Figure 1 (cartoon, rainbow, N blue to C red):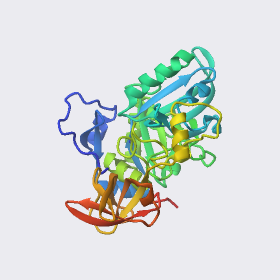
Figure 2 (cartoon, rainbow, N blue to C red):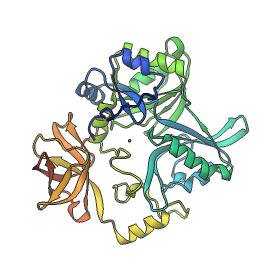
Figure 3 (cartoon, rainbow, N blue to C red):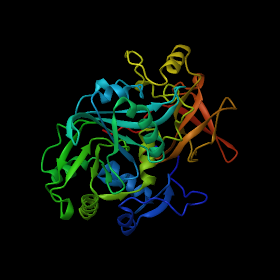
Figure 4 (tube, helix red, strand yellow):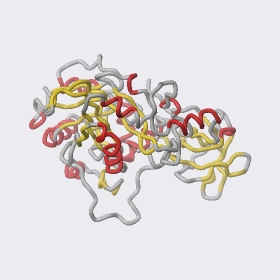
Length: 388
């Protein structure tokens, strides 16, 4: 889940398209290849979209993300074996961010787990969990999760399908916008809470449509992720734009998430990176008795200590650090940038980078090599931006 996504060197002719592809193009979206999909990188412009989310409200098409539903008695017990976070810290109507691990403790992907409680389905009442996974990893994740959980009697299905629509409504005005649409207060829905709602104020195909709404997002602002059927999702997109909500692309999504120091899979973490190295140690609950894939490796690393860590970096000048740029400490290359951008909110160049543990302390003077020049930088507290 770097700078704004750029076109692939050799764009594929069989890129997948979300159901909102035509609507995004009609709204002025500039479409580029991204993770096997053709997606809007921007509409009116990255800075305008970024600012809209920070100050008002923006809407993103994130229908490329994977959404799985897991059903079966004891589904959380079964899923617990794949993640290092204690899933029993959340209950029905709650969710948590976590990671899938390999045997070496490396991160296969990051995801959100939604506890749906006991729900009635075709096979009767069962425990249900919904997972939202990254687009680039969706097929591999799905196959791997099936291989691990189906033998335990867990039924796994695509919750969204090719025609479902997933929208991210983000920004300080997002709660009021959604409350007007559903005709009820959402004050009691906490961050990472989720609820089934009805679009009482929807128009056209969105009128009276059901929506799975979660108070989650990838921008550092308040907001919701909304899962709908195709026709209702198309109508809701058009209604939101008609009511003044700003359509936003992948470029703004990237600058927003980086200001909030949210990780991008494939850049800031991967299968060769553990949560402890990626500064995601808060996801690892070694105190719980349950076993999980990668636990032994993380126990060893926890005891021995990590040799590198992901840190926040702020550059002193206007030069922008990009993915892969060398990071220097005392004149020697010690690491590299994983994500970097110019922060529209802060008016500063910011980045995430891996450095040796000894150079990870706040205030440590670093430099980033940019076009052959060592640009002064320092380790700073994450996130770079925090709302409110």
